[in-house]
Every structure is written in C-alpha cells, then in structure tokens.
Length: 167
Image 1 (cartoon, rainbow, N blue to C red):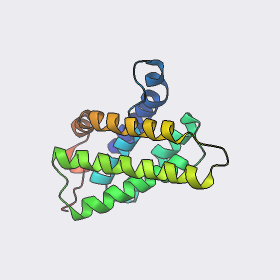
Image 2 (cartoon, rainbow, N blue to C red; image 1 turned 30 degrees about the vertical axis):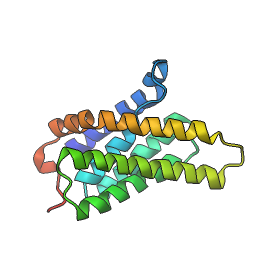
Image 3 (cartoon, rainbow, N blue to C red; image 1 turned 90 degrees about the vertical axis):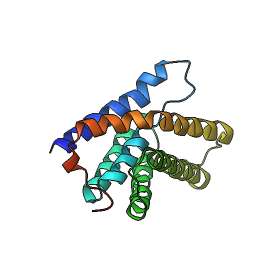
C-alpha cells in the first residue's frame, strides 16, 4: 500500500511541476518530463501488472491536466513502461548509467509515439521544428532530473518493495 501512495503523490507532484509550475518560469524553454522518469522507474523496479497500470494512470493524469489529445499520453506512458520493462528483463539495470540510458530510451519512445501520432492522425498543420525541439528539450531536462527523482524514490520506498530484474 505504501508504494501506491508514494507513486500517487509523486505523480501528482510531477504533473503539477511539469504542467504549471515550470510554465511560470520563463527562463526554461521546456519542462522536464518527470512523468516519463516515473514510468521508467516503474519499468525498472515493478515488473507486474501494477507497474503497467501505474504507468497508464500516470499517462491518464498527464492527459487530464495537460490538455493534450485524450489518450495520447496513456498510450505513450504504457509504451514507455513496456519498452523499459522488456529491456530491464534482459539487461542488468542497477547502476546509474544504465538508469540514465533507460530514461533516454523512454524519452525516445515518447518522442517517436507523439511524432507518429501527429504525422498520422493530426488534421491540422504541425510546426515540426517547434514540436521536435520542445520534445528533445523535455527529454534532456528529464535526463538531468532523473538521478534526483530516482534517489528520492529509492529513499522513500523500502528495498523489499522493489523487485529487481534478477528475481
């Protein structure tokens, strides 16, 4: 029950920071994608249906509060979880560099999914340069913030509640 509560609070805080607080700071060109970082953490440490449901709910929360196309981030975050889950089942992912690589992979999955959606399903013209620049900056800021987010989650979650890929 405690991990569920911690992820609920972390998800709400991440959405608040990502969608509203960072938007008020005019010196940053984009907000860090903290939801992708949380989904990557779920994919690395929670190899169950609960982790997939958590990633879906984080995407739903982002869909609800960001004003994006309904369902886009639900799909995206579930795909991020799935890709990181599959990679973490095959590779050793317990060091900081591989965690950063997993965040980079999750960000790449998100960028590809969003770009593919707008390429296929969008009925209006899209400013591709602006969209790709913003998504890339979000991914870079997520890479910068990921060690702090992972350390914070590791400090609040008991070690026994985090199953590893080797188990």
